[in-house]
Amino acid sequence: MNKYFLLAFIVLSLSQVLGRCGTLTLNTKKEITKVVSQYRDTLSIVCLYQDSLGNAISTDSVYILYNQDMTPFCKIEKNEEGDPVCEKLKGKIVSYYPSWSIITLFSRDFNKEYMEVEVGGTWKLLNKKSIHRSCDLRNFLQSLWYTPQLGDSLYSLDRKSIKKVKKSDMTFNIIDVQGDWIKLKALNNPSCYWFRWKNNCRVYQDRLMYE
Image 1: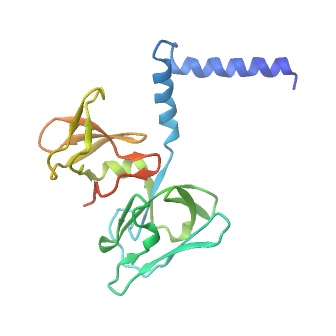
Image 2 (image 1 turned 90 degrees about the vertical axis):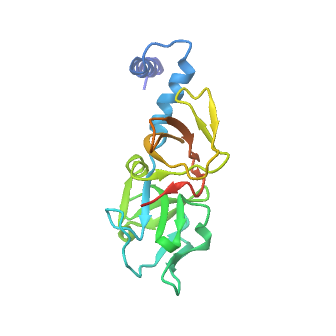
Image 3 (image 1 turned 135 degrees about the horizontal axis):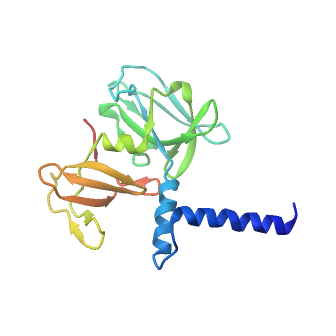
């Protein structure tokens, strides 16, 4: 390809992108960050031991997670009490509550046979045939409640002021999701806040509240 034609093509493509983003102003960096964040968070959610409606299912299925070279990484299976357990997942996935059959992981498509799931900052492989529930991250979060812990920071809607959580029984609806941030609305009053619920794929644990 002629190098001058290639340069012209790049300039045209860039102008089209900037046109969609609006006129460049002093807030360009902020606006571009916002646009990028909208496309960066393409994660979905896999919920093991749940049906498509989010109900716990009774199954003796054994889930095997593989490394990228297809060597086994870990096995999730029920213990003597009937709870699905795997110590390698504890504190390293979205939610791990074996007693309630809740094992939730970030996921993304890999190929026709496997889905990638995130464990402690690394991506493992899980056979799609074993998955009963896979859903959009935004819809998943908006179906839950959120309970910040003491000392957590709640940000005002303009994110200029911070309120520290002083009660351990505060519960919020999740009404919006933007990358690492979720917008929370108090159950008993109209107050709304932003809260950073994760840092990339590292989730702040024990705050998502399931039915």
